Length: 475
Image 1 (cartoon, helix red, strand yellow):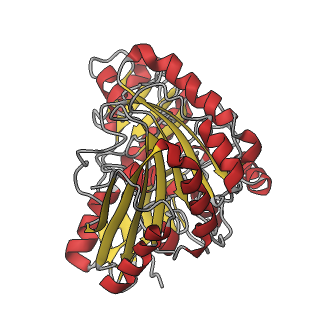
Image 2 (cartoon, helix red, strand yellow; image 1 turned 135 degrees about the vertical axis):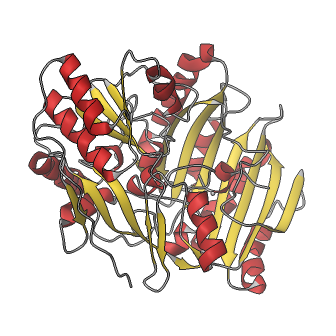
């Protein structure tokens, strides 16, 4: 079985949002008064810094075992939209900022900030499907595998979701959404048809193409730069591909040049339902290259024909190992035993989009292979030919996605691994056309995540809808 990072880094009738009762307009002043008022409004769901439960909740909010050195003033375990409204209003009254946590898989833990209220949405697990309209109405904290399991087993439907197990749809969608079959069915953010959101003033609104449309535009790709808390997504769903297969080859590292050259030349011919990735690693002590493809389609013949493209590489026959046309059901319901980015590890990551030639890629890839740990790796994903995008915040893409992933377990390696990632990625700056926000590293290496026009438009919206910067934006 191929792990998620091996496989990609693996007309709508939309209901109006239901109303939510108003929280108290004003709160008493002083820390103890704020604590008392919050307890009344949030029914014991708020945990302040210094409370016995606080630190465990702060650490649990981040999947990465490398926890951030940032400490919210309070953490709210929201069970309803009313809780979210109350939390935002409390933050406004106290002069605190607001962050939202759905699945917690942000590598940088951008959902954990100082002087803030962190709204943890993990207890909100709504999934409602209108099969006739082709819409799934979900809480952002619902994981992609849980959503697709329900779609598969009850409706024979599918929607692109993250390749990893337990990753919430919240960040996946809002930061771009390059997931299973996204080359064929579109980005997660492009499949977002509408959403319910709590604004900086603590009002619950519905946003669509025709109502509060700025909030939808920004939700489609602004990631941690968003100026609201999404409480419900209305996602487009599709007829499920009934055939899913994978093929892969493992080669020696000295085959890097012919493999990359073939990949760069051949990728324009890849059908949109074929996902191809290349990973350079030394996880078992020996440096290797793995190229793998996943294809989803309606017939066995179609899928096998697409995967056969991998057999045209001129170094086929010299592989260390191979698997071909392996039947799979995706996304996985449990983490694979050979997961390249497993739960419990520490991570430092960064990435670029590039349209570089084969010669440029070969030259730069060779300089990235000084891995700081045996588990670390360089990941290459075929994305191009790039998609025609609708008008939305998401606005930067390239033919190739390249990521430097430091994976390790010892806290003593934090500084060394973080430095390797930044230094490695900075070497790629002159061939970069931007970076993917799902795996951002804005705290240590700011990149071009949005086009200049989209960035300016987003900033204009933030000034209009969140002039007090209730939502902190990018790290």
